[in-house]
Image: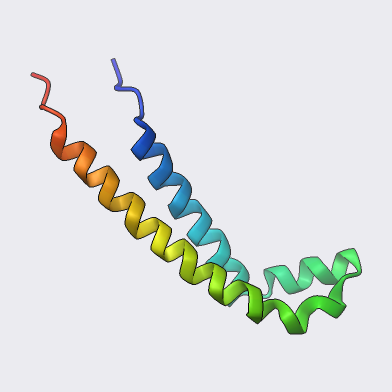
Length: 80
């Protein structure tokens, strides 16, 4: 049987996915094209003020969740 994912594992995976999503929006024209298609291209000059701090926060959240995940894995005994 496969082990159930713990709360720390789910948090770590969510943090990685959030970091990847913010990085994609920062370094590719994905968000600019999406805003243009929706008709909100007037907001594109302000994206750096939001996306770069969001990327920094998500990297910090990922590091914290990785440490918690690693500590939870160290506390588990290997099942034989």
